[in-house]
Structures are given as C-alpha cells and as structure tokens.
Image (cartoon, rainbow, N blue to C red; front, side):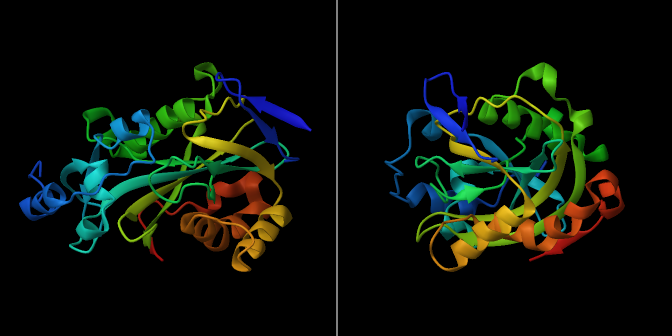
Length: 258
C-alpha cells in the first residue's frame, strides 16, 4: 500500500486508490446564537471568521458575511446563500481523488467527499468573475493549503470551470450548507501532502469504486457528503468516459438546481 505523509507525521493510505451590506437580520440572528462548535480546532475556529461571498439564486454578488454565519441553519432558513466550489482532481490513470473530511470540520465531519471543496473569499482577487478566475484562484489556494500540492505543480490554467450547481443540505440541527457551487475539474498528476486538520485520508478511485462507495453509503455502511453524490450522479458518471474531451460538457452560464 502506498502512503501519503503529512508534515505532522500522520500517514494517509493512497488507494489504488452589497457592495451592499448583508441584511442586518442575519447578523442579529447570528449574534443572538449561543452556539459554539467546541469540537473544532483553533485553526478551524479561526476559519469561521473568513468573509465569504453572499449571492442571490442567480449567483449575483450581494455582499459578504462570515463563514460561521453562512453555515448556521437559522440564517439559511432566512435565505442566506453563499458562493462555493468543488474540485474533482483526476490523475493520468483517470482515477478521481476522494478525501475523507477531518473529524474536526464544521459540516459533515468524517464523511467521504470530493477532492477539495471550499469558498472564494470576499476580496478583489477572488471576486473576479471573468473566466471564473476568482473562484479558480480560491481553489488553487485551498488545493495547496488542504492537500499540500506544491505551488509549482498546479496553476489556475490547470483548472477547468465546468458548471455550477445550487443545493442546500443540513449537517445537523445547527449547521448546514446553502451554496451556489462552481464545479471545477483538474486532470494532472500531483504530489499530495494532506493537512490533518482538514483531511483524514484520501484515495484515488476508479468509476466502479466510486459507484460502490455510494452504494455502501445508500445502505448506511459509509458516510458521504451530499455534494459528492450530486457531483458523481449528475456529472461525473457522464463525463468519465470522455475525460480526454471533457470540455464538451462545459456549461458556463447554467446553474444546475439540485
């Protein structure tokens, strides 16, 4: 078995493998909440202060709010929606990298998920919308931070913006997801050094292996994030046989409602 080591010494088996202000009601709700996610590490707690991009259902920028506020179900019920991204990273063997999220993640801890998912931040570089460049910059930042991919191995030119999807999911009674998510694709062999604060393990899976994982999850034998199932069933299974010509599936102006 081939292993991936993080800088902390943990190893990971590699399977053959507005500019308007945000509505004050959301801020007041968040301020009143006594919720404290005490299972998070100090690093994860600090990340709750990150300012995310608040959008409407057509992905138009409305303003900014904290990661914490954006993931509170009480705010999601009021319509608070933010911009996010999912990356599917394929190697040259046409296997996709699947990670297991750390047990100290805010939402869906310990679940199998896509290669990397996170959010662009509310700053000029990551707000740039031409060719989804801002989201690509955010994805590159997180691929390097979360998976430890060396800077020289990957650039925004390696990242293909495929489409967007809009979804909502509860992680528990307090925290959830409500996102317009940019689906990004990378086809490249890279070196992986996962951050154990973010990732428990990661494996490269063939299509049949991913299908088996999702079947296990349907039987209650594994836990997968709702967006991994969306990505696989709505997009990846269709794209996989055509990875050499995958740009034929690009839908830049469409938002998939799932």
